[in-house]
Length: 107
Image (cartoon, rainbow, N blue to C red; front, side, top):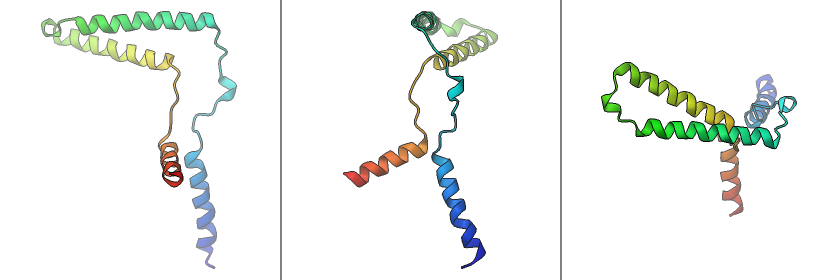
């Protein structure tokens, strides 16, 4: 056997293992969130959502270019804040591919 094939298979295995490993493992940084904090966050989220609805209701044709630009920045920051507050389940592309392959094989 060639030396290159002795190195190739372990490298392929390593890449396969690392490609499916979660990239954001920080168990020591988990926060303990009490119900009070959750209620405060939900109240803040409601305020941000009402602000987004107000911005949507504004007639933007009467605004100047700098005002529109500032409003776009505000909308982006509000959306970023809302996504940071929300907890969701995120699937990687590799995870989705594995799920699809398993479904195909089992069905």
